[in-house]
Length: 112
Image (cartoon, rainbow, N blue to C red):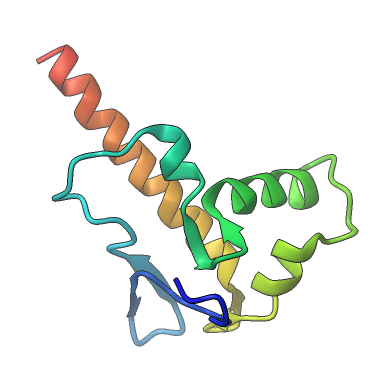
């Protein structure tokens, strides 16, 4: 990604026509998986925000026992909305869905 990039959405956004949207195709599932550390440390919205930072920010700042002082990651992602919902929520769901799909595939390979 370029150093002066403000926002990049490496995914397709599906709008259902009923005031809802969903992030799709966030990851290229045709490619060989990369090591977990590299996957977590890849840029998500720009060069300053990684998947790891997004997950940590959401768990630290928006969980049940959270600190309501938002960090730079959430300040940025809360400034971008998709159909009146903060963009980080859409991306956390997309990351979770991808992980669940990957775990299901891995489990099926271990236990056919």
